[in-house]
Length: 78
Image 1 (cartoon, rainbow, N blue to C red):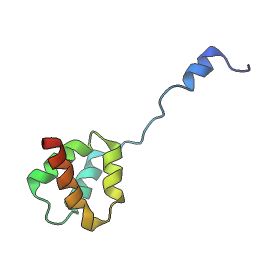
Image 2 (image 1 turned 90 degrees about the horizontal axis):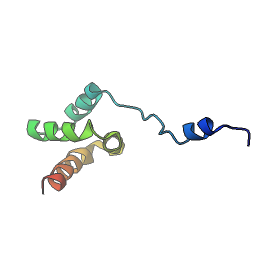
Image 3 (image 1 turned 90 degrees about the vertical axis):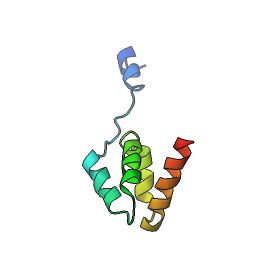
Image 4 (image 1 turned 45 degrees about the horizontal axis):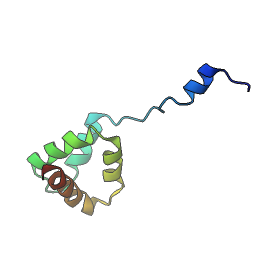
């Protein structure tokens, strides 16, 4: 074996995930037509905690984003 124990441990460290700035999330939410302020705030609260959710939102066509966010809000409020 060429590596040391410390090198082996480094390979187990989690990779750094890119973090979307909160302002970018707000801008993306503001672009969604007819999204109520309360729905925007609920969605913002979820999206700042999960990079995966924000990336999923950004992959959706614009016409699906509002409905998806509302479904996400309903799912977590039940």
